Length: 270
Image (cartoon, rainbow, N blue to C red):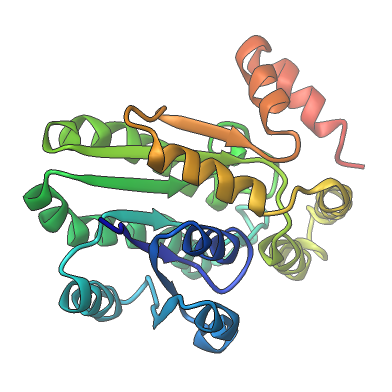
């Protein structure tokens, strides 16, 4: 039976690449995003598109209800939509921090709530949460982004234990440097809020580091293939790591002390 997949944040980057790749491999794919106009290419490939704002409950409910009405099932949920605002904690408005957490954690949790009843009924489901190497390792200026991704890691670990007996797997994807507009937008925002404050030197250093990372960033198809590997495994790993610099950074996280890792990371902020 053809599996039905819902992918959020499908208008660009990892979400778009994954929607296309899974559709090419026989999945019934629904791509969801705020910018419906950016998903015309997906429509041309037979992917169904849905307007979705993960910060609005009525939008989340409407999205799931539409898919269940059309297919009666959601077999795989890929929580990919994300916000990447960077800036010093002292400088960032709490309203922007709250928005980032709404997108990166509360929207994810609410969507999971909405798909679980059908998955439990079918005794089958795959919930894929896109985290980041930034869910294990932090950079300065990334306070709220990292807080949200660390939260995704914890949410996923607890949820995995709750739903395993219902035939549902929870999979975390931890990308490293991946080509995405979120990086550029995050750096732009960071310079707007911290580029002229006491943190301006550090903000510029982080922006320079980001520019270097973008040059070596992996194509999103690398992560799309990891996701396919995870959802097709009978007994998937709890975490899949991929893209530029991911494995080496997580290795350093394991073997180095916090303070030594801090020094190594800060040495790159020039």
